[in-house]
Every structure is written in C-alpha cells, then in structure tokens.
Length: 104
Figure (cartoon, rainbow, N blue to C red):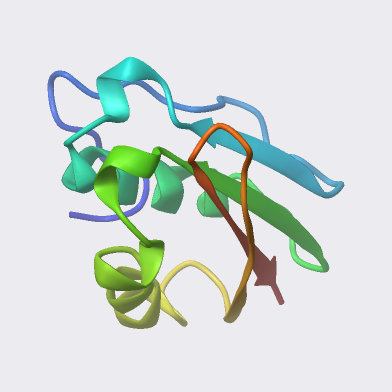
C-alpha cells in the first residue's frame, strides 16, 4: 500500500500539504489497539508534509511505544515519499507518544 492509498475504514489525517511543521493526531479512540491504522495514517501525514518540514506523530498509548510498530514502517517507506529521519520526542501526560519525522 502506498502512503496515499487508504483502507476502507481509515480516514485521512489531512487533505492538504503542510508547508510548515505540524502535528498529526493519531491517538483518537479509533487508533487504540489498531497500529496498522496508525501506520497508514502516519504515512499519509508524511506524504502531506512538504520537504524541509517535520510532522509530529502523536500516537495512542494503547499501541505501545512507536518503535515496536511504527519505526520499521518508516524505514520501509524511507525514500518512497521523501527522505525521512525520525526521532522519539516524549511520552505525553495522557499516555500517548510523540515521534517527530523530518521530511527532507
């Protein structure tokens, strides 16, 4: 699946390309226990981030640390949409996680 294709039950995080740094909310109740959906929507958010900017991916705590399901998907997508670099930022007070993806 490419970063711009969606499964039937997933919704786009955004439909505009952000030419600035921004945050994608991937911690709604529909994301809890559904890391595949989080990955799909994260890749969509990255595809909608203009080069030279970053997107903060805020993921649901029920899915665990993003290194367990998201970072391998980012590595696999690196170069497909753009060149990517990512880092773990912090755990939110609500239990979610913030990962920053730099789009080059």
